[in-house]
Image (tube, rainbow, N blue to C red; front, side, top):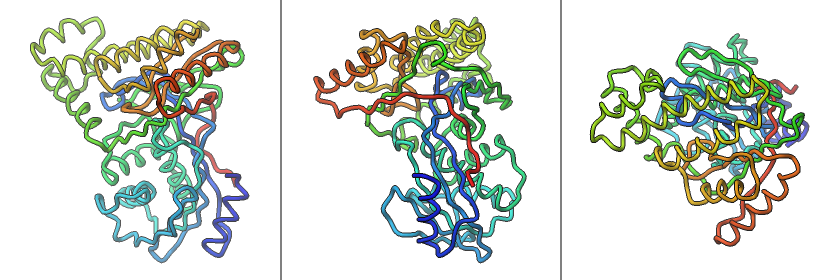
Length: 384
C-alpha cells in the first residue's frame, strides 16, 4: 500500500493524519540458517517487500492497533496492562514492541498505529520482524528515544522472545533494521558486528529467485524450540558456551565426543558446517566470484534437510527441480517446516527455472508456488 493510502486509512480510523509513516522490510537469508541463536554467523539481505506503519503518539496510556491485512476492527489495549502471554493474536507483535520499550525504561505512553504489509506471512521472509521494526522505529522517532538500528533490533527480539513466545534469534530484526541496498549483511550474532558485503547480481547477469511454497510455518510451534534446545544440549555436552565455539577443523573430534547422542550430533554438525559456509560465501563475494556460491547454497540445503531436518517435500522439490532446470544453486531459507526457497540463476535461465518449478508443483498436486526476484534493498526508514 502506498504511503498516501496508509495515511488516508489512518485518518479514517483515528480522525487525524498520522505524525509520520515508517517502513521496515522483510528479509531473505542468503546463507546461515539456525546459526543465530548459536552465536554464529548469518548473511541476510532486505527485500523490497515491507511493512508500512502510520503512527501517532498518545499521552493517555492507550495503544490502538489496526492492520489493513487482517480485516479486524481497531484493537485497544492499555499500555499498563501489557504483559507476556496475554495476547495470541497478530497484535502481540506491535504490543510486544511497546512492552519491550517500556520494560527497558523508555517513556512510551501510547500510540495509534495502522499497519499494511507486502511481506508474505508464513513464508519464512520475516514478516513478523518487519512489523516489529516498523513500529519500533516509529516510536523511537516519535518519542525521541535516540536508539540506533542495532538497539532497536535487540528490543524487537526481546518482544518476540518474551512477549510473543517465539524463540527466534537476532538475525531477522537486525536485517530489517540495518540492511543496505545492493548489499548482503554479514552479521556476527555474538558480538553483533556488521559488515555490508556488495551483492549486485543484476550487474553480473544473475538473478536470485524466491519461491514461496505457500506452506506456512510458525516459529512459536514446538519443532523450532526443540531444535534450539538440542543445540543448547550439544553445547553443554561439549563444554562450550555456544556451538559457534566449535572450530570447523575440530568438528569430527567434537562429534566423536557426543557418542550415541545421534540427534544432537546432527544438530551440531549442521551449525558448525553452516558457520563455515557463511565464511566461504563472504570470501567468494569479496573476491568477485559470485557464481561459485551456488554449490555452497546446495550444501546448505542438504544440511538443513538431512541433519537439521527442517525441510519439507515442497522445499526439496523446489531445490531439486531448479537445479535440474539449470540453476546455479538453491536452498531453503528461513526457519523451515515450510516457507520459501531461494534459487540462484543466470538471467537467461530464470524464466525456465520458474516454469519448471511451477510444473513440478502441479504434477505433485502441491499448491502453486509464488515466485519473485529478490533484490537487495534498504532497511527500515521513515517515509514521511
